[in-house]
Amino acid sequence: MTGTTAALGLDDERVRAVLDEIARTAARDDQDVMRRAYATAADWPQPPTAQQAADLCAQAALPVHPEVGTFLYQLVRGRRPVLVVEFGTSFGASTLYAAAALRDNGGGLVIGSELHPGKAERAREHLARAGLADYAEIRTGDARERLTDLPGPPDLVLLDGWKELYLPVLKVLEPQLRAGTLVVSDNLPMLPREFLDHVRTAGHGYLSQRLPLGDGIEFTVRLQEGPSHR
Image 1 (cartoon, helix red, strand yellow):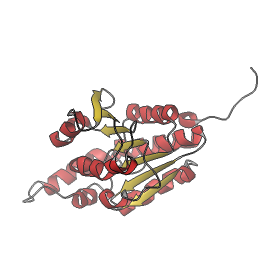
Image 2 (tube, helix red, strand yellow):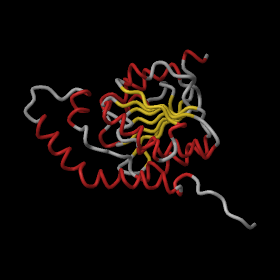
Image 3 (cartoon, rainbow, N blue to C red):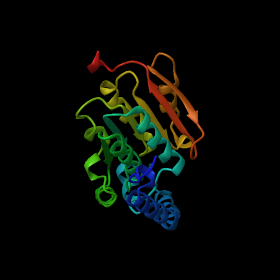
């Protein structure tokens, strides 16, 4: 076969340039930002709320590990979802992986949620620069409120925000899930026991296991439809 084809997905120069920029920002700033955040909250009488944590970490990119991002791209290319939903967009690295795959599939939408307005705007700028704005929508605010009204059932869910909210956010989404929905939960060592028990316990409607990507992810398949789809 002769001729050339346009670079797709992770070989697209615009996508790669933005992902590399986010990675450089994280390597330069994230450790110092998180150190200051922990030091600030150390003397607080209560652990920080999700909003307080978002404010403390506003300058931290916190991107998904490239292994996890590549896995997301693979899942979207293979599963060919119509709708991807993301909790915890930050600067938009994971959104870029999913949106690039949707574009390469020929269509679809990723709806991201980000509590911090500055981060949400930065993610939108990154998507626009990568040429992927038409495949993503970033909703600013509490995911427990912003993800209740979706245009259809999610085919793939990424949980990568405030860890204590993984289970509450999943429960908000559950009525909208259908059999076969995939759930990727990042940062496995940090996940609350209650969340892992929920997705791993027989009878809760999931099949779930750990995958050694990045620092570990929980990979989950919904086995039954939520009430709204029965």
